[in-house]
Image 1 (cartoon, rainbow, N blue to C red):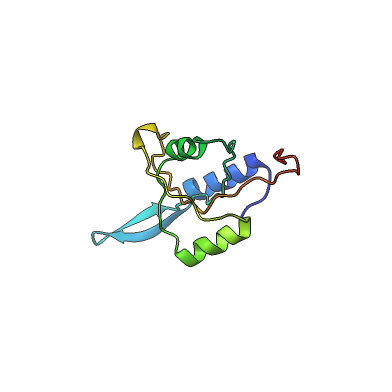
Image 2 (spheres, one colour; image 1 turned 60 degrees about the vertical axis):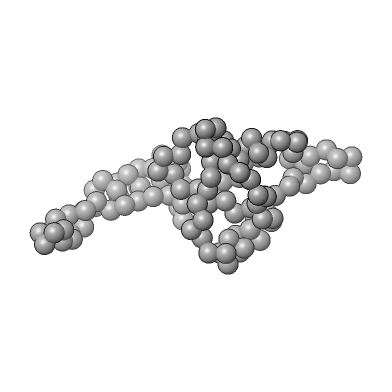
Amino acid sequence: MTRGALTQVKRWAEDLSTRVFLPYTKHGKPTQQALGVRPVQLWEIAFPDEQGNYEKVMDLIGKGESKLSKTKKTMLRKAVGAKPMRKHEFDATKCFSAWQVAREFIGIREDARAEDGTELV
């Protein structure tokens, strides 16, 4: 986990990925490999709870991965106060490019509402 000014965090990650080379053997010959530095991020995507919006948003995000165990997903879901995702048939023609971006859906959470039904932000 990192914490700091965005420019400094980016610089730290770039330094690690471009200045650190570790030895290893490839096809019996010694060589070097750059250190792989990748962020792990948790995102919340908010959208109006109107008929059809869930399907539209899910199509734009695209089909997620299923690499987390059920136990880990349940723990994360509970930590953020979400429920399991609803079933959805994805339309790959509507998805934004997610080349080399793994996406793991944890759950869905409804916004809190006031007594008059207004969403609380």
